[in-house]
Length: 146
Image (tube, rainbow, N blue to C red):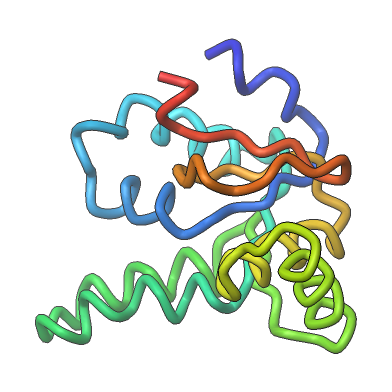
């Protein structure tokens, strides 16, 4: 997939939706997220995401009593090679506040993007077409990559 080539050797920020599509095998997006996560697994690039991702992905399994799905999410976010799940820090919090002030993004999105920026990411993979274009981070929207 041509869109993966620019990601080689860089840090990529990851939003929650692409991970959900991959783990839960969403047929509308599986053909695009599967090669992404295969490249991550090979170490073609490193992924960073916020601890907010863990919060967001665990809601559905907890709501439905699906302990196995919850464990799958924990395993990939907390133990996978080449994926770093980053806790909140003062630096991330302040960067998120700047993003909210400048671009009026929702708090979870601001935290996700700020985490990526603080980790030195060049790209941010999401499926949220409402995220702002910012100089520090090229936003990649799955629906636009299909």
